[in-house]
Length: 415
Ligand SMILES: [Zn+2]
Image 1 (cartoon, rainbow, N blue to C red):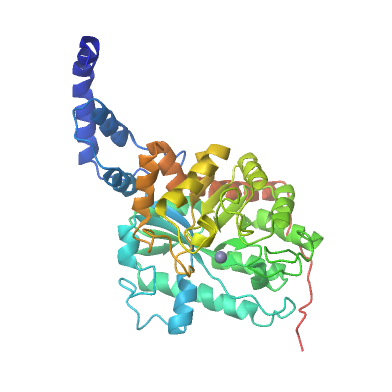
Image 2 (spheres, rainbow, N blue to C red):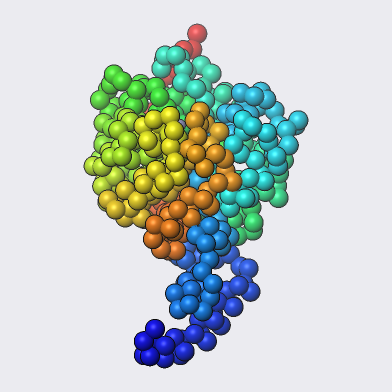
């Protein structure tokens, strides 16, 4: 160390040590609404490490400390579907604090994973034909009801929330802020009434399709039917903007994604897909849509499914981090997050086998040189910003006098 550097260190060290000590004493979680930025505590500790006056922490220690202060958000979890399949949707005989395999999710592991905000999917399978809508709304209500019963049964752990502000408040109170998403336009049975009623029940995102076309939007499943959104599909996107529901373009075709780019006023939102530039699976998002996402201030939440990471049956934590790094280099770290798809995955990435494992991925990002502020943005801040901006779009549309779309499509399969 040169003498001038030693002198500087001697001057700065007491201040850094004081800040670091204060940081260690402080347990408060900083969930400030503006930027959800990394706190000075960690910056001070990092400075102390650089000056050689504090023992360097491992990337995993740093990850855990950051996540303790800024609980993690995830864009997609399918436990409702798994409980439906394995336990007929009944939770009375399940202990959700500890669920055995094949469950990837339980409360103990959510806590270990530092999850503070989770969007739960109220998924129902595609009908065999898009005109068969008879049971879609009933089955969707079953899933929403299941998620509400889970939250009610574990009030110390879960709180259903309907806004970014409520999510921050719940996370600050030590709860796992829980949002509901529906996973496919087939779930509204071509009904804007159903869309609005789902919002009233707490649904805050709709994936426009699952792996089946609807009568108004193409999914990624070949061959294309409409080549994107139909005019009614565009109306549905506008109605989602008006009510403040995130327009999720996971699972849709690239043509549908591009049509949504041209229609939506709210930030683009991808709940659980990865980068097409690294893995050319049609479920993934191509670079031109990612660039549009930057323009729309949106977010892609990365899916951990090996098929979408390595385009093969296996994948590693490093390969998941590659997707995050790829998107960060292309459009910046403000437009990426995690949407693991736990309990919906048939194969798992090695090292990311359940909801307890997120800190290992965060450690990998820190190891690669992502700053604390970038990590906090990726793990929660970006999602909260997109949710908040979608709410603001709805408020602005209401101010300008936007009215409900009263197009009423008659049920196709009424007898
Ligand atoms: Zn999915």
